Image (cartoon, rainbow, N blue to C red; front, side):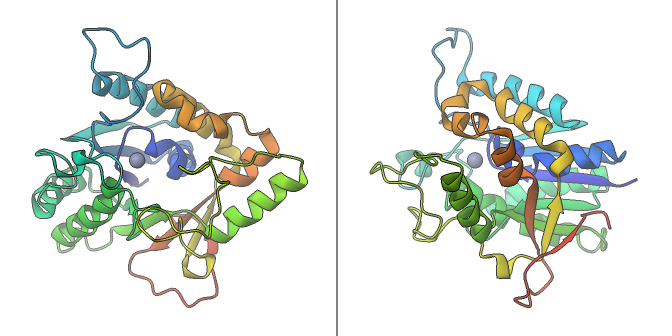
Length: 278
Ligand SMILES: [Zn+2]
């Protein structure tokens, strides 16, 4: 049996991006470790937050519920503060993940990689999927940590989790055919989500299918994934769109997870369907 370590930016990112793969790895008897870079303190503040509880506390306990749903064996927080969205003042705050020294953060992740003798590490693609500073930083720190352990752990695989831009476009068309009139999260200007439009970092969301190398079928685990999303209740208005999706549409949107194998050159033929432990 192997060990999977998923490195994520914020509490709740684990549910959508790699939740199915974690649940599948657990079901097959692998060890599953989640490392979250930040405390998520710039998320939505729930109305019922008590005076003796911080948003970071709340998000930590929600992560434990999500971890139980997905079969995660160990959760570690690297302890950086949330850098907020692109352009927020919080990008520049001391202690924010965006401001952190990449090598220093990578040393902390590398220590866990060594401790766990990880077989598969997941990070994000080069633009963090959608340009969020903390997600871009996960890519950079993850790549650096993998370099730091490469000599001692030469067989560890590094997979960059991302969204399949072509699949998103097809999913939106399918939703419209099924009669969904208001499809998807709208942007700041109230416009309908367009997977080909640039996000606020200038890049469209995710990665074109031709640049992906691995697609993983997690369809037996989509309900676990939905439970993990729901576990992050304080952020649920962000996620409610996903939670309210009809079962068939949710399975279509979340039944596969998409990766770029860090050391494999995409040949343009699109992803093969496979598994991270094959
Ligand atoms: Zn995030």
